[in-house]
Image 1 (cartoon, rainbow, N blue to C red):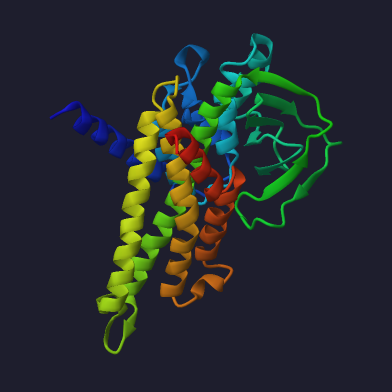
Image 2: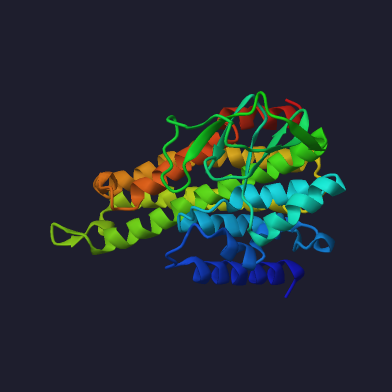
Length: 324
């Protein structure tokens, strides 16, 4: 058995363990429980208390969190911990331990005067990524925070925060920001894949049990063709995400690795909302029932597609890195 096969087995075991841990949990908002599993330190080197730079494992955890509609601030905290790992010592020593043990919360957003961030109402610090590097902003009650009415996620509501007048600390340069932004887009893509995967699995079970004209709906050829299209999307999405994650395993990300991340984000951001909507149509529109989880997953993938830029922006970034 080769190293690649052994690596795949280890990743399958990680996925299975994560799914067992998360499935059926009542408290899907508990960051401390995720921190106790060392999941907030997956992108932090071991000498600082993390698990090492592990983008592949992080995308698997992100996918499983999306699958169960986890509402914690894991996404922001894991990325903020990675950013803080290379911050000046005084800033790092103040905030990194709190990120790793889940006693403080953080958000991650694109740089700007007003930023869009998940769970912006409960976070303590904000990490912004952009061409001007990585900045840390300590949030206060005086800052203007408002729900983002353009995005619809009900598990991790998106907020807009005005940081135009806030004091910020530079904790990383532009190259490091590009690297972490590539990782952040991959984690959002993996989260959307997890939400779709749960939707698709539930749909297949429903179509096998739903009887029409004396036979299961899943036996109709037209339905089977549509299911195959969804299965192909899932396989493509997971393949492109994993390829990009493996390219990012070096902390000195290459231009090709960033391009692959942009390609993954562009593909999933553009296709996942339509794929979940297709699941809704094949479910007979039942997704409009509030208690049924399908529309919650649709809201989540829609929000993910806009938190760190659009599919069009990622396609432009891919073209730039590829030299088009």
